[in-house]
Length: 416
Ligand SMILES: [Zn+2]
View 1 (cartoon, rainbow, N blue to C red):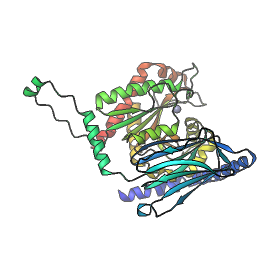
View 2 (cartoon, rainbow, N blue to C red):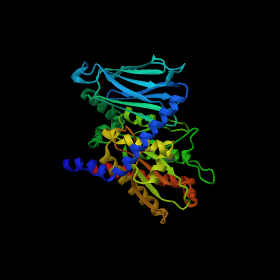
View 3 (cartoon, helix red, strand yellow):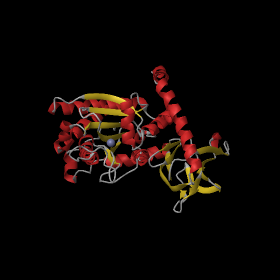
View 4 (tube, rainbow, N blue to C red):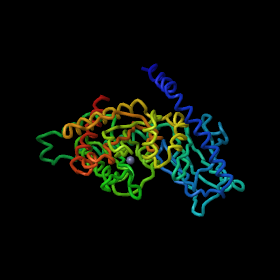
């Protein structure tokens, strides 16, 4: 098993080498282009510093007016405990501070805070004052431009024990009435599974409608309806804690959705979407986990879901291997298989023509940096007239929620 785990990335690397090479090439040319743009234009504003954190994970987002060239450095390496970085700084070139940029105080045990200042004309230096961190990753996202820093620490036992006891307390049934307690002893809860909390992520929202069907039906509304139904089903039938990235029609940036899942220590992350394609005959259900796109079609879908261009998807592909260090690849593939199988089975029972497009891999922003098994499911095509009619129907939302629920249940059962 250990060997297999070791060989899978190697095998993938060999198989995907042509794609990866072209992606690196694209990254290089993208970088050149950014340099050219940077030279020509006035300094880009650093708009905002944001953070999401828990004691073993912190995500920082630096919102920028546009893409900039950046470089990162570590200061006082070895000064911190056991040779860990003492301070991290990032220089943003051809940049200036926006009027509303404020330093942030964090104090979560990983980072003391983050501050930004003009280091020299045209260079903004962002400094992360570290406390005790294990590793970190820095990566850019586009449209809108932002730089993301994911910082991770060691899992501390006392914290996970505290959390366990808190979750157990939440899940304990209310005490039975006194008279009952004498005759019927309170049934002992079965041993809790490894999965205690699920984050559901209905895609898009607010000013971002996602895919739009010919009748004007919007992806953001369908996936929210499915997500809300699924939340109730998971609570009722599996007795698990559910956190929604959004439960109303609001816009949440993609990096914040993943950050929410990490912050609440979710055990599974399920992002719900509806598809669209230029070919109006395209139809069916497909489920993704994070990896390089193997086909142009997948890269195009990722560009659409990431709200960015195909070129930016190539840039992300070039650095994806490095970003996947903490991604639960095998577990995510397994979760994707169970969910895909169950949604398809449920949909086919009512609509026998339903197509199973299977489990695929793609570079979706919303899955990058997720610490838990995480997938993105596309429950049908809004661009297809027949499927658009299904997607309009609330009973289809219910059916799809049942399918995802069955998939999650099957995944949990398989862990026992
Ligand atoms: Zn979508």
